Image (tube, rainbow, N blue to C red; front, side, top):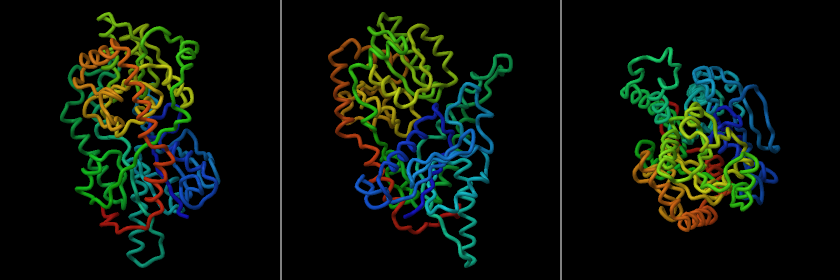
Length: 442
């Protein structure tokens, strides 16, 4: 039974984003299997010994079963040192080497990288060291390297850089442009090259969309690139006719207004301010609407200024409470373009919400019939979002029809976490090692 190490170099916390939650769900799914063994579908065990490594305030281990555990390691150089104080989401580690992880990795057979910073660079260094030992005919167990792409890090970094001056105190903010468009593009290109070098060392690379698979297959080869879907937990996320009343009772959300929900980081990378401005414009045009936003981030205060009493800011919520929030709203708006897949969209659809997504975004892959099980916003700006949201709100029967069809799509078309683990991950982890096509040379 292979021992698998999944390297998630992000902080595990209640504010963590979809990348961390994704691997928490995979770990929970693997732990539900009765014993290590056969098929990965619940009849036996997952057939692997799984350790998910994350960052934490302190080192610790959470055992989910005898063969599944979550391990937190303290970062060497946390990005928290360079992030705004009120942005506790998606903290990573910029160190080139993580000694504690380096001591733990050799016990595992498969090293699964999910990012391209400290954990990945440490795994790459160790793998090259083992390869050199092999070349000298010394006994060394060569790890199998695989990777999955969860976040468009180059696009995310560029978005943060472009808005960096807006986050600085007014007293020290430069008069001119601190970050030019060219600088942001160069940083984005450098991060893309860094990511691709890491992927080039891996025998298998898992991506979220067919378009990403086709793009990477051109450089890595079709046999090395596969899809890794995301699942949905239907026991957590489902329509609930009592949720609206609880939302009003617990959070003071107006009971009689259409509720537009946003879930995620409240920052420029998610384009949440653009959404807030579009909702304000709707109010100015006489459409009564209330925003509900679950998440934390640097734009929280600005959103409050833009929407005033027409927004309820919930902060970061655990999955169980978040599920009730989904089910109590009418519309889920996700204007972000940096998602590789956007699992919050699937959670919203399973909860019976009409989802609004920008044209061309990878999140639209959750829809099977755009316009019927979700709305694609063609004009992706403040006016376009205001018009698209307002048009459907003016047609309540159509709004309910889109919400019902979204729930049907989620129920009939979206896979469960068990399916994704069994069909997408376990064959890669348990499969025979393939030729490395020059792996570890990068």
